Image (cartoon, rainbow, N blue to C red; front, top):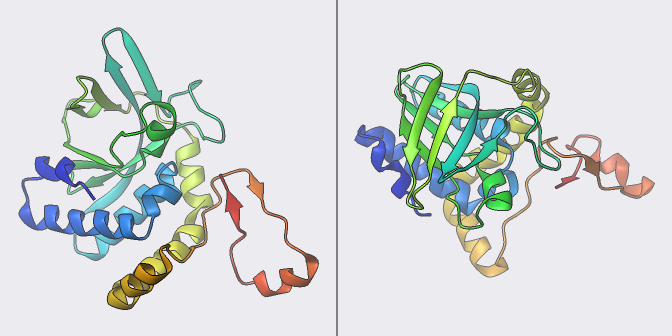
Length: 221
């Protein structure tokens, strides 16, 4: 994965940890599967970094991308896309850096080649949480003058799903080589249970439902 977005992180150890997490998420297809699920992605990243000893937390916000006379909103009230919730969430690390792993919506509705993740320093000037000049000439700004009440509700609602996804991530950490070899021969990743972030549940035959009692429902975008 292209981790040039981490150049802003001056702490070498933290930059290395973030680069490793980003690479692992890429290998596991987390950005492809959950990239539009900013609540889950931020919660997972905060959990992983907290376990590594960093002060990491999820912060509700919204974001705006400005270029020329146009503005594209991410998670702002009244500006949500199909199957999306109002609000946005990022991960704050050591009260110094903002890490956004939940930019999949931008790849769907703004630019197909938009970065999977971005990072910037905390501005320290409320209500601007952080801002970043993009290679395209646009500027992205994360703001907290409006935070959707959906943020806390979604984080709580998705807790069990996040735990299930993380269990797959931790299993990968223990069996990295075996996983990579298997992926090399199969050409794809093993599917992990998706969080309850979207609207429709795939119907399964009655005879198979008992086997899924202990599993999360299979959801589709």
